Length: 362
Image (cartoon, rainbow, N blue to C red; front, top):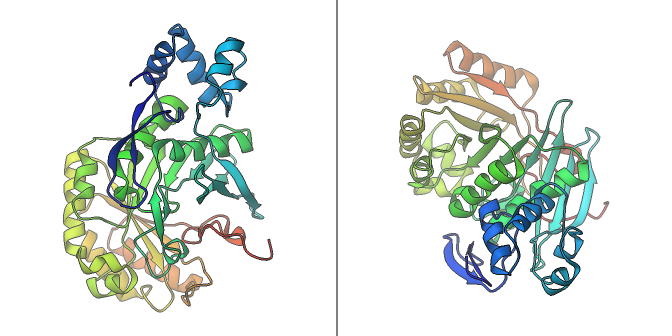
């Protein structure tokens, strides 16, 4: 890291990250070693790096002028250095205490993240892009289009924001918000490492969800992370997957599953397959049997998600009998399966509902 710059990943118009440099770095997402190097390059002693790290990740500093242990003169000199924090543009609380946040970034873009509390843990659902280019037919985020990738600090900031708002340590993070994480792999991996090493969240408590991008699952496996990979399958055959997921036209379900098997061989970690149940579309017993045939002998777990309604699509959630019938077929075929009922439904904070807007009645 030079005296006035740091290499960052930035992609405002393309889904492929490119290296670029900015004159003043956002400090969120930087490691203890990077922060120490930065303060030394500013003429400060090395121990200031640990102080800076502690104030950013554990004391919620939003400006270097907030850090009272720093000399007043130096604080004034570096007051304009961006730490890299967003502002809460809007906050909505569901009856189940799930909180949806609309966060405003420094360029004015709006993203969403969700805080999901339970009795024993606090999970944050983070976004990896502004919008999403995948345009899945049942998902509100894809209906809004794609703007750009999020930088490493913009991903980590979401977790810090929720942690501060809840006044509770975040224990789990899922990359299931806006965007396709594997179209922003470098920044996502950088954020994972920062969340693990700097914020203190175990890698096994981190989940990265992808709809499946050719060769990217294999590339992701090379990093040998201990995170959970969740693949959004949502269909039991190629024709149905193409109907629901536009990218499936160029990446067949067979090719996707072959790459997933490579991932398991490389990482020795089980894959979760996410499957949104749409009434009368993909929720029939024959669909469950097709899915079981694909996954037989696979080190995997199926996570069934009853559809969460959005204004932009006419799909319906199946009734409990249809859901249980689907589960029963998978269990009979010895496929590990569970049903996940999304939290935050009433606040449009559930899976597939994030859309960067505030409704008129809010």
